[in-house]
Image (cartoon, rainbow over all chains, first blue to last red; front, side, top):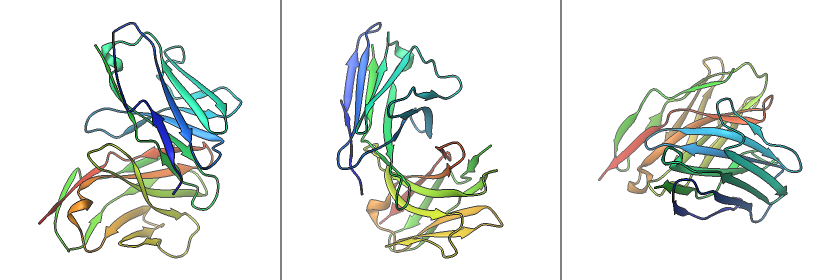
Length: 116
Length: 114
């Protein structure tokens, strides 16, 4: 299957700082990337859909100014958590959609964010 | 609107036996995709199997097969010959082609007993 990398895998930061998470498709071009958030023992919650060269589409209830998404190229999307607070602590997972074959999405390994 | 329902929060199966994980869905899309993903304790999401809504035959991938019953709107995952490494969370998801996004069920935690 296609490979998606995510960096960093784990980050601890102080309240009020900003954190950037990168998502890269390593062996394919992804016109669409998704950002999810997952709380312990819960399902994935879609935060936003990121399309290369255009503004991200955010799900209802997700603050655009808090979670900045930039899809700069066909292989890179970034999520920046601005002015992070402890309630932003979570597991963030990106995925890239492959528009051929099974049309599935391949996931990055996730980033565990802890805000102190 | 799209909705995925997984009614089994947790299941146990004996090693080497088969197990069926339930998934029902509701969608207004004329065509859609159905997926199953596995999430081990490490957190990574692993794609297992895909079924297109217009596919006549049930999808199979190795020990995984998808029991697709379109009229009943169900897409159950069957794992044959369970292995200890199959212990994980399993998520069913639907791809809405209309909205270009995936909707996930709440997941089923599978425990394989030796």
